[in-house]
Length: 246
View (tube, rainbow, N blue to C red):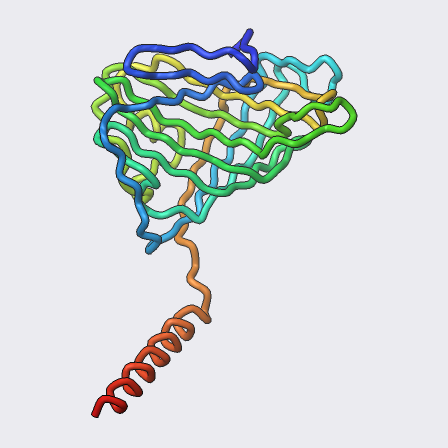
């Protein structure tokens, strides 16, 4: 991921577009087939991704990150609640998206995370991308993105079916590679952001450990009572209409 600029983009075969944002490369695929949007919010889950790694390259002219090559790093990405089924899906791609928080000093932030799994002609993909909302910096008069995280894997010869349920979620890096199968072509792990537009940095790292967990979102204790109350109100209204017509 070295040598990438925030304005570069590359079009590839199969209507793929690789989007470079703030030094991070997110692989976005636009598929010609129909997508199905999930509107069933029954069964929601919170997803946690924790990682440790070793910095392999860094662009930080101001020293804002406090990190150097070969330093150890670690962070936690929490996002959800997500529906157990994908937000959108096709025969070759599944996509989840949800509000999230990323804990990594000095660029801890809240934002949006996407999780994508793909298999297009044997080209398998599994990736997370987090991005905080753009912020205006009055000191420079520019907008900047204060926090980003990308971790993804691409393989050739994959036989994996895009994940249809978070219940089938891999729990670590070995599980992701076992799910994808095939031969690993590329693996990206990187961070970018800054405290302001004048103190931005980006770095890439080797993943030393990666742990994923999915937990059901608890239903508030008052929710069943609320539903029961709605049902009671509906029954009373029906009974009044019935009585008026008798």
